[in-house]
Image (cartoon, rainbow, N blue to C red):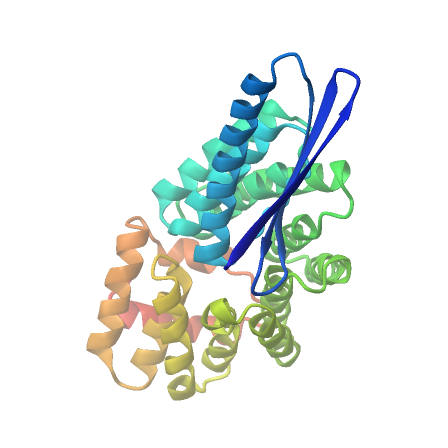
Length: 328
């Protein structure tokens, strides 16, 4: 038996309270819980309503847990808003395409419309704007500014929202405000040290802030916390190798990240550089084709303008390699 659904019923006067909880029987992880307080005027209609609700929400949460290892806690009294958050997360994690990002954004916006104080939804919505900006689906700076604004709204609603601090740190990074970026990333990990995403994003902030040695440790911690996504999190290790010129060592690490998340552009960028540096030009061109598949309008000028690196010494080398591979 992989999952156990537990529950209970309490009655007081004409009111009834039903509780339900889903547990992963193999790990003991609490996957989902809910409480339903309703008048008992029509017990059969109430039963049908709660069964429909449990089935809908459980299917959404179980899908995220089984496919991506994601637990999206409710943190709202509006069950429809929670369901929209789960649906948005499914779009967000199912692929890294422009279309799936837009679909996720729509669901997070619906969740906020239903509950304007839903901090998790603001955090997730901000992430869609950050991804659009990073992937060059958005050409101006508006998307990065919007991402920052939404993360600040999330923090204002719930100052324990660790992922909001982490994403806020990423926006500071691309504004080259390195001290603020690192502080936000460290705050995120302090709030939720067991969140692999926060550990990974701190690693990202550190490597681009000129602290690659520190970054590797946080990426490795993220991989230990979530081994199923270890290849994704250990991209940072390959990224560091690429930055410091250990190209042959970088290739197998970055290839694993690209295989885990084929719709994520950045591993393809790093691999193109690695392949050019070791003399594998045809393989580099294959990576350029993947970049243009994901972002047909990808621009090296925009890449140069938006790069967050504190140490610019290697940037011209990257640009020369990418041009040699065929990127413009």
